[in-house]
Image 1 (cartoon, one colour):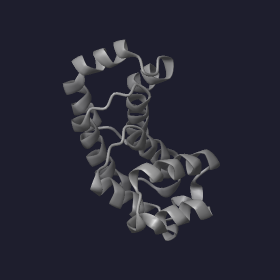
Image 2: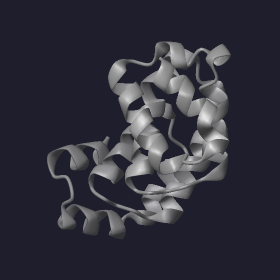
Image 3: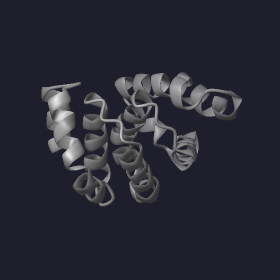
Length: 146
């Protein structure tokens, strides 16, 4: 919640980023233990603050990959766009995250069914950055069709 609050209250603040840099070890430990809702909020805060620490983002991506299969489609739909948007805003590319995203957004996995318009827009924007090229065309087409 703290990262979310900082990002909301003072986006792009250098003072807030300085505090985060001093706490980065603690943030890394916490990111590796968060559930999906808190993980998505933490990543949104990092992106809002332009706190682009590749190691911390890697920990968060690994946590998403490990946790996403345990999260039911309606719940994951609430958070998947926020996580994807944060990675795109910070231009962070993680192969296993992309593969998990592709897998969970297949129509027969039902996550796509629960996405709201703002989440669809965030995903469509994010895919232009994170998933260019023909390899990801089907996933982009599925989101665009929704």
